[in-house]
Image 1 (spheres, rainbow, N blue to C red):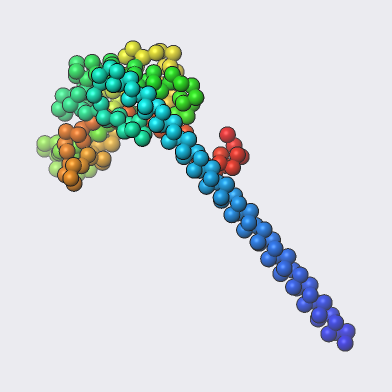
Image 2 (tube, one colour):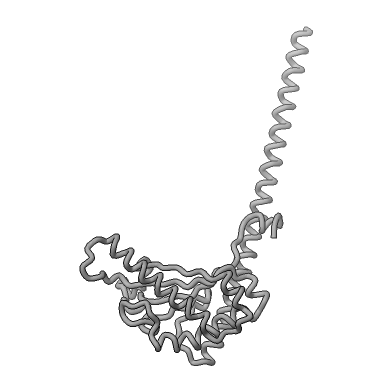
Amino acid sequence: MALIKRQANDYNEENIFWVTMSDLLLGLAIVFITLFVVAMTGFSQQALQHQKVQMEVTQKIQEQLKKADIQVEVDKMTGDLKISDVELFELGSYVLSDRGKALLNKLAPIYINSIFADKELSSEIKYIIVEGHTDSHMFAGVNSKDEQFLRNMDLSLKRANAVADYMFKTGYNKEYSDKFRKILVVEGKSFNEPILINGVEDFDKSRRVELKLKVQDWDVATALGLKK
């Protein structure tokens, strides 16, 4: 009889253990789901805020470019500017032409001043990226695909660097120079991102320099308010 009673007690203790573990696991699951929902909500809000910032900056840039009668392709959502190499360089060269310098003399001050004039907006901008692109035309006498890629990479990077270098020489508000230097990034893309028209590369459009804005990164800790 005592044995039966002891077995019953052991059974009850075991049941209590599993009930406790089940409650704990359920509690952890609820906490995880809550954190996930909060994080995703934070992500949505942060993403919307970033999009809003980019669109506001883009609108300012577009308005100023229109006033100055500068014809440049602008992405309305991101603020990315596409400048044809035809406007900047001679074919195969990375030295800015007189025409290219004249264009940047007008464009760069508008672009830089529009970004930094509003402190709240500019604080959200993490990088200004000057990005060079080539078309997929091959260099004469070069048969290796790897060498073709690298030659175009070198050309695209030198063109982007030429544009970035000249931007500092234009008449933008020099009070922004420190900030501009801190967030400026120069990149070369070779022929990795061609412009396609009906599935066919447009060589003239593919040869370009883009000015891009990247807003501050988002992460879960920020969304949860764990860091700022």
